[in-house]
Image (cartoon, rainbow, N blue to C red):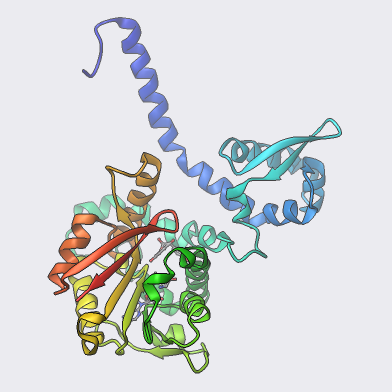
Length: 356
Ligand SMILES: C[S@@+](CC[C@H](N)C(=O)[O-])C[C@H]1O[C@@H](n2cnc3c(N)ncnc32)[C@H](O)[C@@H]1O
Ligand SMILES: O=C1c2ccc(O)cc2O[C@@H](O)[C@@H]1c1ccc(O)cc1
């Protein structure tokens, strides 16, 4: 039933529809206000203050022009409404404190996600969206990013060292969360003598695994330009190569946030190379995938929205995708594996153990 017959509820439905639409039009304002506050370093200032901070104290720490104190107040009002800050009173004056989400912007903490905010909301990640109509009406086999910029996002990173660093820092920041998850899924890595972290970037995850299992021979395998200046030690090494060609042999292969960058055809190629790399172990080898698993039936709608947002980001930037359980199963079986197990970790990702 789209509209009821009574005039009153027809209007009310229209008003609700209007609010729904406006809310979605202005969703970007919350993202951009968050980015602005992250760039100012507000979380660090509140954290270093050691107690709730008043607006005037905050403005003075930030060395704001006096004309911008009211502006800061309005940014903080929205972000307080959104759960990023909370308000209390200091001698009758309003003062701000951090909440759990804004504590993730404290730059001295290993759990800091400011580099994700910086990279994901950088103009180089966002500008492409203005070309979506052109992209929809063409069939050139390009990503939205390529349609907008004439190069792939990977080529852009390879030609822009500062952007490559920004991307690697964002990936490294996300990987620190894995330290907590490792406590829950330590058993997955038990009894492995060797592991290759394919597309392992600058090795944050591998280092955490190596610290938990010092006798495991760990290799971070990534593109030459990513690992060229990385150094390790006897059981924690960097190897340059191309995962589409071949992958070094090991008891287990780790693929964290790699397969979602690629479509099914290319993901299949990577998985088949992983299978080859563990073939010497017979049925004992395994591939460990850490990625999103969409589960609309069981996840709450907010979590599903985040996963679907990521799906569109992967589609538009890389021609990649976030997968549901059935899509993971099809991919895994098509690559020649016989069994798998999906376990949710890190809040919105899953760990998928894949067996030959
Ligand atoms: C999204 S990042 C994930 C990095 C890391 N696994 C993490 O979770 O932080 C994908 C990684 O795949 C690497 N990569 C892309 N193409 C590759 C290739 N052909 N061979 C090896 N690594 C590749 C990128 O350089 C990048 O470090
Ligand atoms: O968060 C981002 C992300 C995460 C995982 C991945 O495989 C690719 C990603 O690219 C964007 O979606 C986004 C990001 C973009 C640019 C950047 O410098 C950092 C993160």
